[in-house]
Length: 219
Length: 117
Image: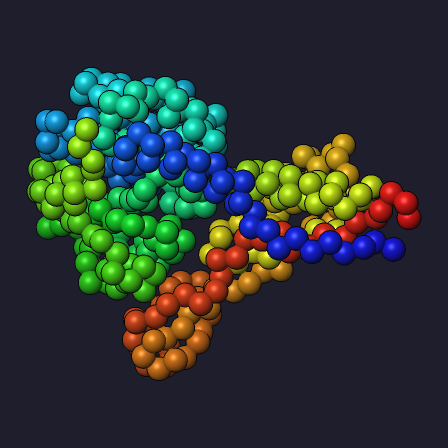
């Protein structure tokens, strides 16, 4: 007769343990970490580039680029902006996990940095399950994706600390009901810190940069 | 596609529990999967059949206890399932709700055969 063994263990436990370890590494180095998630084409790299441009000059940041294929298009853009970047090729995997971040952190000059931004793989489902050990989970939702995304992808909105609504410069051309969108967000994550901005025009970046700068420790 | 990583984690938890309890074979694994965890059963089963080979879990049956996501209306206390698409309270139309359950992602228990048996 088989015997029953009670376990009641969270399946994500081992990833979450590694994530806590990553956060300890960041804290030890006084580096604030951001996990930037979005669907493909929402403007993750553009938002990072505009953020780099807008941050005070004394803020040093590093970027971890996650991609499913060994292409360095995004990392090349970051490096061209004079920022240390590490490329993670997930080999087809649809998300980054805490173990990949641990390896990437070892390649960045953390003692010199104030901030790291992790650009997750473009996907609204899988990244939501994997904590990386960063301090803030940030999602970019862009206007052209449509106003129904919180309703269709509720899980990713649940774990967010900040929401960036990108491409607001396209608002005149697209039927995006902001009230409907924000009602869905509010149902899933009440009081979520939200910034509407455009990485193309720079509109709305002041408030986002002010929020971000406030989180950073000067060295 | 994150089911591979999820399945690897299930295998590791089950193998470890079997070892700690001197199990020679795991016959059944009982999972609790909330609707909001976006896990596809068939996909987990597909990976499971491959990666459990050669371990004490080989041939173990996976049981999925799927839990619906339940919303709770703060205005009128009505509880309702999330369904296909997120909606305000069907009773009073208030969007002022919170998610009561549906985010579970657990290995709840396993059945094992012991070495001595």
